[in-house]
Image 1 (cartoon, rainbow, N blue to C red):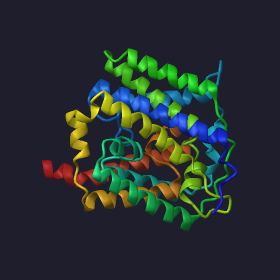
Image 2: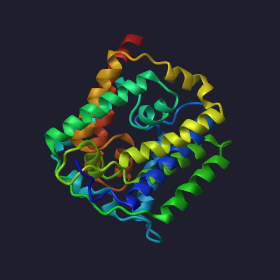
Image 3: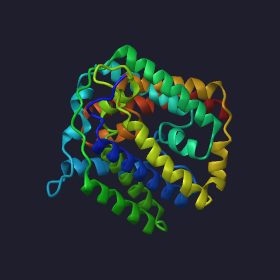
Image 4: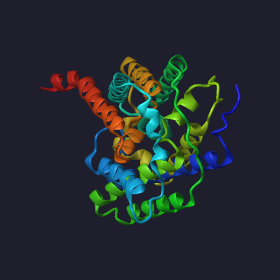
Length: 303
């Protein structure tokens, strides 16, 4: 195994700082709302912020900070509609059964030492890697670089999100903006980055950027949530105490297979839709449908 040429000092720094941005906006959201920041769960305020930020980053005629290549639309174009629909549905089913995704379980859940989140992450990493190896997606990587303007924008958004905590709706929309901008900075909206991490034996080599993203986010969340006593919030404690059961493990397996097939998870998927990607919109619609299907039995039982 060797490192991919796409993994450079600049891309590693961008991934680390982008991860820290995710950790910051998730911390402010948790402090403001006394619950975890949603990503896979449709949330009007957060999703509006994510969609709006992506649109502004690409389409702002005055000072666009990134171009469409930052989202690697051609990578999604290389996948059939059937593949996108299956991938999105599996991610949706998995995130519903496992009560979270890479952000919920992989960052916030691990930070509060949830056994269920540890199990979910281990399973989706394993099944995701196996799937990426088997399908060997032909994603064409685009150049990644460290962007100081994006860093300053993430910091400004997080500061404004914090200062407007008394206006929860506005603060939450800004949290979505900061989340999406951090994902773009980290390069996590690029399917090739996910493929490069999951496919250890790819011909181009391994790209560990995702580990830097999660490490940066966990560094912030793991410390801040304890200093601010957010781990003692009822919603956070309930999330941390979820049982590690078959439902969670099956969810992790579904999530991993879908992630490996399409190269998208919920946060990047929503953000990619904001960039104007019709293929990402197909994936997102399938993800929402998958969540609805997975949640139907529980909803019926409550009736």
